[in-house]
Structures are given as structure tokens and as C-alpha cells.
Image (tube, rainbow, N blue to C red; front, side, top):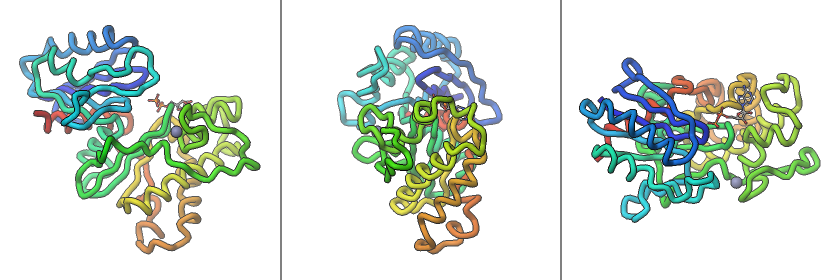
Length: 290
Ligand code: ADP
Ligand code: ZN
């Protein structure tokens, strides 16, 4: 059996299992590292004997450089109490088990690649549009880390201030993709949460435009075989049609492949594992833990 932890800004999901067939989960609210990680450790202690290793998919930014003294730490988060917290080390020391850690979106991507909508693909992108925007890329079957890890939410995209005077909500960049298109930006721009805006509200055409810009940039950079869009905002399923239309217009027939012409429904689609993608992906991480 493997243990998995999906560490999020509002809750920590803990799971034990090997696959979607046998995964059992429980969750704890995110408060301080002491309390939350304390509960997580207590939970796994009870099953310690049957666990081979632990996989963690976490909010970040994270230090994922194996040679860094801060490997496995949460680094520059504005979240009170969590800055520079040694998440992987604390779990490893308490449980005396091998631990593997990656970003929450990379974990979700691994879950989808093993059991979901990216199964059998070597090149794919998973992006979540929720409180923030984050994304992971699978390239030749491997999750991309690079120098740190990708921060696809902070792509810079065109912002027509006549059409949309909203300055953007990213504390670092203002009108980056996340600043313009994450859930809190929708709420701040229109004065209402996304859940209350009807499908014909202009918020959605604008949202689709911004997301299509981001996806266009990712598609021409990484040439993925498929892009999966998850997160709370994508519960607005009508967005998919709008995004595909905008995406096709932006690409303008330049990149020639059937996937990008008449098969956009497959190219840009929903994750199949839904809200379980992340926690399932932590099991894949756990398999690789050393
Ligand atoms: P998190 O990103 O915190 O893990 P979510 O993916 O649920 O959680 O994202 C929360 C954000 O998504 C909030 O800004 C919320 O307003 C927005 N959101 C959640 N559900 C919907 C929905 N059905 N329609 C539009 N926006 C939504
Ligand atoms: Zn930003």
C-alpha cells in the first residue's frame, strides 16, 4: 500500500491505496503546519505497518531540487506559517518512510496520465483554474521540473484595458494569466462569484479569451497531445466550447494536425478523475519514492 497526501490551501487530503479501485481518503482542514501536519502524521501512523512509501502533491512554490538543502520545503508562499516549512522532511522523519514530493498540479497530471484522460500519452498538460492557476507538463512521459518547476499561471498574455479595465489580482504581476482569469479575479472584476454568473454573462467570453491565450502559448511551446483543464472555474462546462473556439481562432490554422483542427474536443478536455486526480497522482509519486 502507498500513502498519498494532497496538500492544499484549504484542506489536506490523505489517501491509502494503490489505484482508483482501492483508494480510501480522509481530509483535514489547512490551519497551521503543527496542527494540520500533526493530524496527517497521526492518520498515517495508524497504518504505518502496511505502507511502503508516501507521495505528496503540494501547493507551492516548492523547492524540488534534490541537491538543495531546502528540498521538499514550501518556499515563498504568502500563506501564514507555511513559508519555508519542510513538508517532505517532517513527514519522512515522523513516519520513517520514503517520501516523494511534487507540485499539486504535477501530481494531478501523473494521476491523469496513469488512470485518466491523459492515459497512453507522452506529452500532455494539466491546468487548474481555481483560487489560483497552476499547470504541469508531461514531456516524453516525464513531468517537467526544470530549474524550479513551471508556473503556468503566471504567463503574460495580452490585456486590452479598454475592453477590460480590471488591473489584475496577482500580488506579484497584476495582470498575468492568474491575475486576470483565476476565480478571485472573476469575483473582483464583476463583483460576484463565478458560481452566480449566468452562462450568457460577458464574464465567460472574456474568461475564455484569456485562457485560450494561455493555452495557445503552451501549445506552441510544448506541443502537447492533449490539454486538460480542471479546477472550480472549469465547473462552468460551457467554457470549454468558448475556449476551443478562441483557441482555434488564435492558432489560425498555422499548426497543422488533425488534433488541432477537427478534434479540438479531445485536445482540450476535462480531467477524467475529477477532484481525485491529485490524490491519485500522489500514489504514482509514492511508487517512485526513495
Ligand atoms: P482551490 O483552487 O482553492 O483548490 P477550486 O478549484 O474549487 O479550489 O477553486 C476555487 C475558486 O473557483 C473560487 O474562486 C471559486 O469562486 C471558483 N469556483 C468554484 N466553483 C465554481 C463554479 N462552479 N463556477 C465558477 N467558479 C467557481
Ligand atoms: Zn502572476
